[in-house]
Image (cartoon, rainbow, N blue to C red; front, side, top):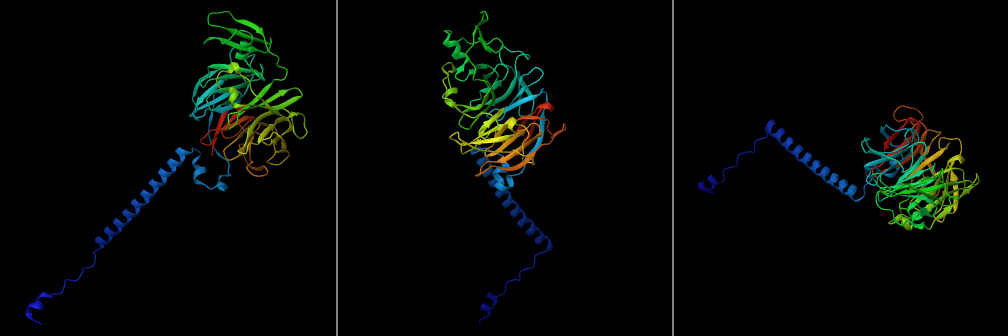
Length: 404
């Protein structure tokens, strides 16, 4: 080997070991990369969750948790005050307005925003606090508000802002249809019209005109109490005529458009009594995903189940255990087929799972008392699309809000 070759093969300098500062910097760099990766994954997950919620709004807990974890009671959120004996409660389709009927004091229909602030109030035309008895309330998918007014035996219909539209005054009769049948055609905007049960007359007054009365229709088989909408937009109501405690179903198409042509193809089931398939002061009706009907059979202290063919199936909730009812009033079915029942005397909300072959008790929430989170004669319960539960807490003069 020549001298030149030896000079060209000079060995490379050995790699120096990393200093403590260099090792620390390397660890920091790797940690930052790991954190950035985790942050990226979280952002992707949050984006997917947001997209899932936009496509199908529902409580976040129901999106994140498996079904078995969901079978736990909701948590108390807050209360809405400024009410006098709330009887019924309902929520607008967009979950932004809460409607409540009062059974005492001025007996108004009060509307609150989602934060519990009073927006406005209204009442049926031609009535005073002395001659109106507001009970249950329901809001349709179109935002129309249906109020059962028990003293005059009518279901008043308002728009979302409390403007009176019409009233169902008999099984197959609205105010506008009745006036039209008497040759009054359609009244101009701004007209006043209502039914007065004390005098059994229909009153109407055009703008600038005189108040006129005509004899009312035959109403011997009409005494509405509870009102609820099912997912198809059908109006489910309870009818408490003596000897004929029953459920009536008004199809959705009968409630659309011009109500002066109201001609419902009614369906009905049930009779008055304490036997199977009978009711004693039924208060509220709901349906599950399979189309089955559930009725709060008030004075019989039970829930009655009927199939989609309107055939009686069974009853449940009767007895003396923690799952038993005392005086069931308003009921609500959520999108998990959990049946929520306002037990007035028990001062509790009882929840049953009706998604299986037989109803099963899940849990109770609320308890008797006057402090926040307690109940005193709850009359009604409903839910919105975000998982909030609203309870008409009558003797505490408030709406209690819970949330899944």
